[in-house]
Image (cartoon, rainbow, N blue to C red; front, side, top):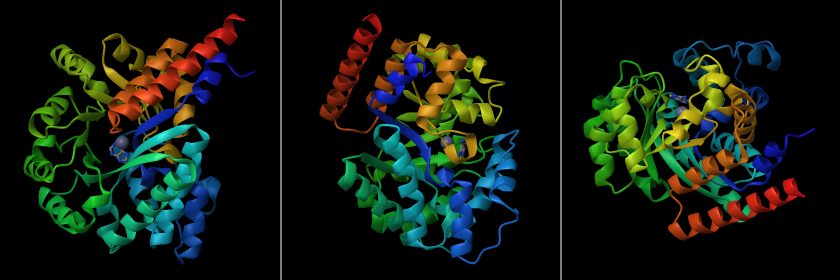
Length: 344
Ligand SMILES: Nc1ncnc2[nH]cnc12
Ligand SMILES: [Zn+2]
C-alpha cells in the first residue's frame, strides 16, 4: 500500500531546479539513438549498460555521462531527449522546471550550438503549449575545461540568449574551484542573467563561499558540504540562499554513505532553503518523486517537511512572484485536504 505521505508527494504541484538534460538519457533511448545515428555502443545490451552504472565518485559517473551523450547528434535527438524528460516530469506533477544543458559536451565533438539549443528549446515550448508547464533553460559551463573555453562557448551562445535564462557551472569539482571562472561569470552578469554554480558536492565548503563571493551566484547546486562550516550555514540561512539538493545523486556518487544519513533534514532544521531535485535521473535511479519517496522512507520525512521542501523550491525558482504565490497557495490547499482525509 502506498504510504500516505507518498500520496501527498504525488499530488502536490512541484518545481525542479537541478536537472541536467543530458542526465535524463535513459539506456533505451541511448540505444535507439545509437541505432538511428549508426553508432556502435561498447555495451552488448541495455541491461549491460545499466549494469555499468556503478559509481564510486563524481568522476566515475561523469566519464560514462559524457560518453553516453555522444549518441546525441541531430536537433531531433535533443528534442526527443528533452521531450522524454518533460513527459516524466509532467507525470510527477512538476509544473515548472529549470534545466541545465552542457553545450561544450556537444560543441567539442562538432555538434553546432544551434542544433543543441533548438532541439531543447522546441521541446520546452511544446510542454508549455501542451500542459502549461513552465521552464527556464540554464547554460552550464564545464569546469574541468579552461575559462577561455567557457568564453568561447559564451561567444557561440550570444545569438540565442533571448532563449537562455541563466548560467551555471558543473562537472568535476575537486581541483576546479569557482575562482577559476571569476572573469567568465563577470561577463555572464554583464549580460543581465542570473548565475548558479555546483559547489560543495564533492568540493569543500570553501568552494561554496567562493561561488557566493567571486561568482555572485543566487543559488548553490548541491551545497551539502556547507554543513561543515558553521559560519557559512548561518550566512546561507540568513540570506535564504537556495541549495538545490539531489539525494539519490548524493547516494549513488557516495557523497553520503547512505540515504538514512543524508543531511537533508539537518539542512531544513538549520533554516536552509534546501529542496529536492533529481540531477541525472537516468543514471541515479529515479526522477523527482522517486527522490522524495526515497527520502521519506530513509529519513522518515513528515508531511510538513515535504511541504516545506516543495515550498522552498517554488520560493527559489525563477518564476514571477505572483506565480510562486499561486502555486504555494495550491500546495497549501492540497496539504489541508490531505490532512482532512487523514483525520477523517
Ligand atoms: N552531479 C553533478 N555534479 C557535477 N557535474 C554534473 N554534471 C552532471 N551531473 C553533475
Ligand atoms: Zn548537477
